Amino acid sequence: METSKMDRTIRIGALISGTGTNLQAIIDSCESGKINGQIVFVGSDNPNAPGLEKGTRLGIPTFVVDYKSIIQHFKNTPENVVPPDDFDLNDLLSKQTLFTAHADTETAKTFIITRAVAEAKLIDAMKHYPFDLLVLAGYMRNLSPYFIDRVNTDSDIPRIMNIHPALLPAFPGVDGYGDTFRYGCKIGGCTVHFVDYGEDSGPIIGQNAYEILEEDTLDSIRAKGLKLEWALYPECVKLFAQGRLKTVRMSYPLKNGKKMERTVVRILPSPEA
Ligand code: GRF
Image 1 (cartoon, protein in one colour):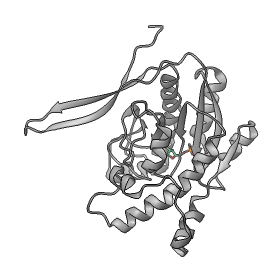
Image 2 (image 1 turned 180 degrees about the vertical axis):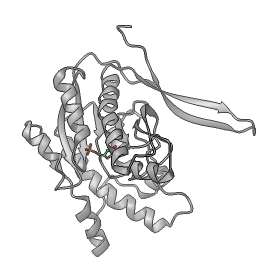
Image 3 (image 1 turned 90 degrees about the horizontal axis):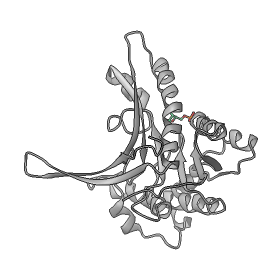
Image 4 (image 1 turned 60 degrees about the vertical axis):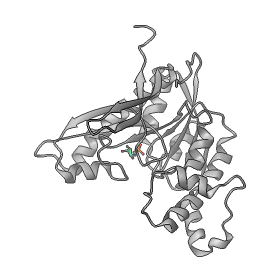
């Protein structure tokens, strides 16, 4: 399984929910030539995301799919919310790993239906701007298999990346810095990974770590972490643009006779090396 080698400028789509400082770091790296790439759209689930302005200021197309109102609509009148034509609830429920088999199926169903409605709108907006890579840059929504399968049209070539503010697999979820701090970790960090059907569980591309000292606060570790994020994310996008990310399915025998299977990322050597 291999990402194709690219010798052209890659087209990068971005989804954000907030301030978009990671988006800015990627834009800067494209402008400076560090990444051979170009941002072709900025989408958001949040009409008030301050980061949208970064796109408009630079003449990058932007769009919003207001998830909140879709979820509210479903809560008020579920019978009026019509899933997309190509929606298959059972297929999506069987693929997703966000909810365990023991989870309340109504919660899982509501999640899948509302997300598929929102994601179909995202896909509709995105189809005007063909892209090679989709970066989630502070996008605070889990994507369902409905969306992931329609972006990763070749299942061997993942092309959705995310940045997470913790050293995965520790502390997946919405508050990576808070969780790291409150746990009393002595080291924190950030992770860039490909997106799979779970929560922050996809193949890891890169990680960076910082030390947590006695005098640190949640704010100070967030500041340390963000600084690392702004360096790490462009670095990983650059590797993608160079066609140097290869996903490999690994199988490891365990002492108990079972096997651990995991898709991992191999970083191919630089062509200049
Ligand atoms: C970052 O810490 C990112 O890791 C997390 O949300 C934050 C977004 O920051 N997912 P920004 O919007 O890029 O400034």
